[in-house]
Amino acid sequence: MHYQSTRIIKFSLLFVIFLAIYALFTGCEQKQPQNSFSYNQYIYNIRQFGARKGGQIKNTRAIQQAIDECSKTGGIVLIPPGDYLTGSLNMKSNVTLHIAEGATLLGSTEIEDYEEHKPVIPSFIDSFLRYSLIYGKNLKNIAITGKGTIDGQGAAFKVTTRKKPDRYFDRPYLIRMEKCKNVTVENVTLQNSAMWMQHYFVCEDVKIRGIRVYNHCNENNDMIDIDGCKNVIISDCIGDTDDDALTIKSTSQYISENITITNCILSSHVNAIKCGTESHGGFKNITISNIVIKPSNDREPIFGQPDGIAGINLACVDGGILDGITISNIRIVGVSVPIFLRLGDRARKYKKDMSEPDIGKYRNVNISNITATKVGRYGCSITGMPEQPVENITLNNISITYSGGGTLEQAEKKVPELREEYPQSIMFGELPAYGFYLRHAKNVDLNNIDIAFQKEDNRYAFILDNATNCNITDSGADIGSEANAVVKLINSRKVFLEGNSTRNRVPVFCRIEGEDSDKIRIIGNDLSNFEDVYNSGTKVPRGVVKQKANIQ
Image (cartoon, rainbow, N blue to C red; front, side):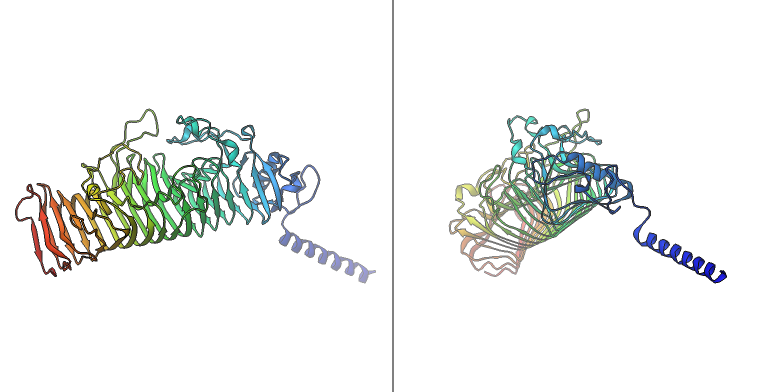
């Protein structure tokens, strides 16, 4: 009897140990939802909450219930293979929405299925931030992952009026996150948003990796908008959009800062890489590298141009600051304008009761290792304001082949200031310099710039107007047979031209105009294709030019 009792006790102890180990590896007690089916507590399959595939039945309630339950423990809401129709979904903290390979989450085509979300932070765009398919506010630790697809079916929400801001209303965003922390979007395919595809507003620690975006069904079809966020990493993405692709905005007082973007392939009918247009807080500490910009597969733009308007557009026009932008290793094919840097004074308010913002600060931009081919004939521009120049700009190792075809008449065009205009790269029309036009600029270095054209162009290669302490070094350019000069300097001071050359023979290397011209240095250039080193207008003071060691 004693032996039998000992065996029972030992067996009981072993059974208790087994249960303890099982509980350790499988988690605490399994929870049962009200409809009594069982499921893993960390993975919440929407089918277990009543979702039905096929793309005809609305599954908003079932998916939202899965999200709500998942938020209690943290875990994954699984969208399994199949098509699932839904209206607005509210994300919750500690939830990963996983779109499995073969699964498509379809946005409803009826606006009544979208919940209205009022912004918590005032911004210029808050009046039309009404609806989103997937929305989060004041959340942490959220993710959207998987190799499946989210399709907004945005063509159902066509613009019915061109009157602003009415044309922005009643068009849902696909994803919008507001004031969230630790946000990840990874590997999913996103397509057909009625408005911007993604809007991340005043978020921190955002990681977007490996996504594919196709957005060509409506107006304002941006790929991604980072707005007043900090600590952002975007990598390994492919986007093809009707409107701007990689877009960094500042529609409120919050600065977009500490942002890294790399290893992406972009196509846009408008701007491939863009800061702005809103710049109220501004942009700070941003690096962008290893990007291919190519023409869109969609050849019928709703807005913009088939091959895109700009490759790189960095604009600060509503106050704020643009400081510390580094862009490198970019390959551009097509687009009208490869590089457009603009400080303007549109001075748009983001709140009705605020005063107009002052002119912003634009400084410390470094752009290097850019190759652009098959681009338009507008020319690149770097422009500030008469009372506020852009400062500390470096362009290094830039190679651009333009379409060409500019005339002598265009070379003498007067470029308007357009200080209050929308900052689009083609805003000035075709510039008097087919290569680079600088105005109201200080401390600008153009080094190892090689510009060419496919068709002869008789405009200047470079124009510097009201430029101070600016250099063009070790650069080369095609120049038209009838061109007046390669470089034109207008009321510019402390300009250094060194180590430059051209591939064509023209009478004059540098044309100098303006009574405020001073301290022009022309040193060590290969001027064997020129009859004269420079000529100057009647108002140019004597003795402003120093030259030596030029090859003639």
